[in-house]
Image 1 (cartoon, rainbow, N blue to C red):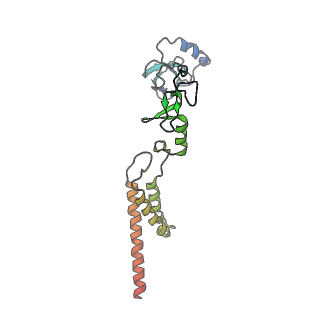
Image 2: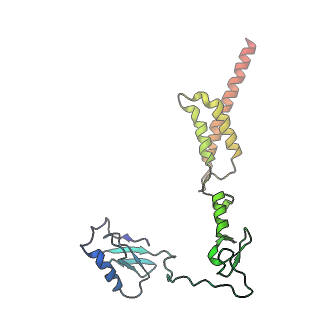
Image 3: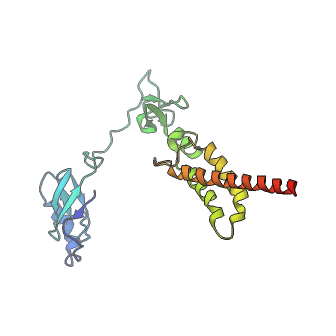
Length: 227
């Protein structure tokens, strides 16, 4: 539930005793209430009756109008889940809850599990322990929690020699940035897709530094040989 006030600012707290009366007022709000929301104006709990998925609602305590958006998961009836169905004769039992009937086969480990112990990931049905193992061990690309921003690393390495006291580090940072940029060019640059301009800039800067160092080394060797 995400109620937001339609008027700017938040009104002060309601009168003394309004919090105690919110429960009684809620009961008298009438039929058709799908969920109850907290009022962002008077800060009272469960005093905004939400009757539609999205629309205006009025707080029963401070009488302020708020816009309430009901999340789809909360729009369900809220009825308790049905009791577990034990396996009958000839039916398989859940590996983790023998009192439940097995409804699925884990696509990861092959055990028989009930719907309560199975999770859907794409087109696969996987038992909850296998899901946790895949997530904790990072053994599945579907559970990536982070990626290395190689474009940022290459750009930082390429910019290090431009500071006054670290120009000498170009002999190390420029070849490293050039190698990492070429090696990780096709890899994802982050969890959110973004353009390649950082990597391109890093490669141009690092490549220019490498060319300058090679040219300087060439002229140094030539000067030594001539002299």
